[in-house]
Image 1 (cartoon, rainbow, N blue to C red):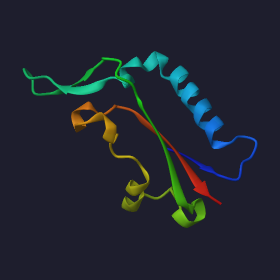
Image 2 (spheres, rainbow, N blue to C red):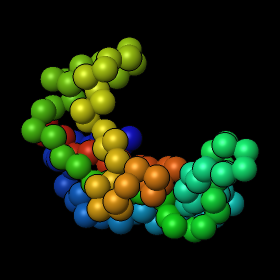
Image 3 (cartoon, helix red, strand yellow):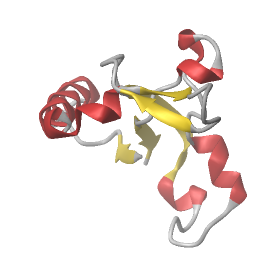
Image 4 (spheres, one colour):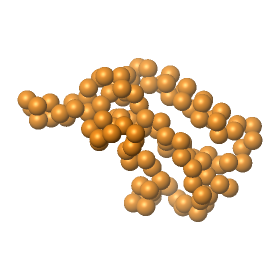
Length: 109
């Protein structure tokens, strides 16, 4: 998860998102399995990675809270789960969710 403050004028959010997506595409080339999905092997009953190139997830979010208001991310806090996308709703059932999801979150100052 990447957080960004809105005040940066040299790099508007649209440019940051575009560059992050491009960087992730390049980084994930040797890790093509990360674009797959979990599937259940009916014979063994185990989860396996189906390398089907379905794609990794990329989410752009915003928060009305500042990073100072959100607190310290060093220490685990179950409340932080609300800040991250748990599933990508447009993909349908949980079995079709990406193995890898990246989230870019814009915060106020």
